[in-house]
Amino acid sequence: MAALDRVKVLVLGDSGVGKSSLVHLLCQNQVLGNPSWTVGCSVDIRIHDYKEGTPEEKTYYIELWDVGGSVDSASSVKSTRAVFYNLLNGIILVHDLTNKKSSQNLYRWSLEALNRDVAPTGVLVTNGDYDREQFADNQIPLLVIGTKLDQIPEAKRNEVLTRTAFLAEDFNAEEINLDCTNPRYLAAGSSNAVKLSRFFDKVIEKKYFLRDGNQVCDF
Amino acid sequence: MSFLIDSSIMVTSQVLFFGFGWLFFMRKLFKDYEVRQYVVQVIFSVTFAFSCTMFELIIFEILGVLNSSSRYFHWKLNLCVILLILVFMVPFYIGYFVVSNIRLLHRQKLLFACVLWLTFMYFFWKLGDPFPILSPKHGILSIEQLISRVGVIGVTLMALLSGFGAVNCPYTYMSYFLRNVTDADILALERRLLQTMDMIVSKKKRIAVAHRTMFQRGEVHNKPTGFWGMIKSVTTSVSGSENLSLIQQEVDALEELSRQLFLETADLHATKERIEYSKTFQGKYFNFLGYFFSIYCVWKIFM
Image (cartoon, rainbow over all chains, first blue to last red; front, top):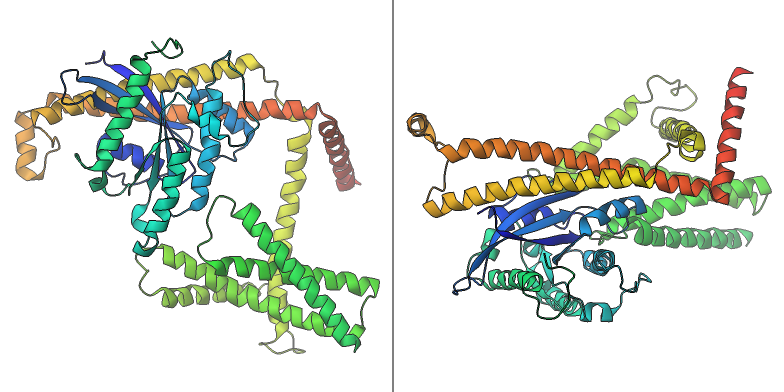
């Protein structure tokens, strides 16, 4: 069992949106009782069955790297964080549904992670601004998760959900909206669980079953 | 007539300051957060506006701008409003918002907010005991009481800030305090950090696999519950669980280590940037100022 293959997924987002609670929920299937600030990076493991229910079912380790901090940190903290962005296979972008600015900062988060991971021979396209084309041919799968769904009153829910749908479209990614203190949102068989499973399958496929000749991340 | 002109000038400048405070709040302080209670932003901007107006009035007094009686009127008005805000509104709202965040006291927010405010007033009043504020010229419930206490707090804060600034500024800018950091140091520390993360990952994998096999075998609870559970666990030892708690302790220790390594690496990066900054023109200027002021302060102390 120790010889399972592994896959690395980053969990990015502003301070306080609920990344640690989310990672704890995904990996331990329990709600995190005492959330506290994440200093540096905290990793957790989820065992995922690729193509569950089919004859090709295989088990993989998914490492969820939860990186703490904010987009406006000092550049020394940003350079230190960049050490964790090596060899990543997928990104989960987390934002707070009650705080519009955390979803706006997601663009900058994804640029920070993706630009770090450009292959050494690639051309650096960084002028710091959001560029939609960068996400169109992006090889790394993204998933957008909105937290604190329970804190939005029913009346405003539609408007918030339309806004996040646009956000997910910009990233060319699926989106899940949930509340990290309630495991029922990720119950087996629910649409959220299916989307999550599909995302992890996509990440594993991109790493281990590449069709084109791209040799960057196959090991 | 001149009173009207002067008042309009004062009101215009107050509105300008209010707008500036509003923008500052929105752009700098709450850059990454959404404002849920606009009361906070309004109080901040109002306090800022009136403080700046007081400063402006002092400048006008020195320069002799505006009519003397209208200046006096605006000064008294300003003073009253600022004291009202500082002593009554701001502490009350701080107490109110603190109480609304604590779930236990959520029901009777106003009551507890008033209790907190009364506690604040008690300590505020007690603050004036060591000082000779009470004098027969003005009674006990006069404006002088409030102003003197606010003055005491203000002067203490300014002294603390100046002291901190005087020590922090040379330490930050003078190159005498900069350690030499090379790229090799940073790379070595980063490698250690990544190695620690790898060790954490491998240990967590073992824990996850053990949990999964236990779950598949149907043993969900491995903690003894109740008195008979404890007796039972003496005879039938679950072999995996002791191992697991040992690994969990190792993981906790490694996570603490990884946090320390991360902070050290960030520190090294910051020092490297400071070294680069000190080589620029601005850096050299501040370095020179640091030396100059340190020597000047020492000279002033002893002469």
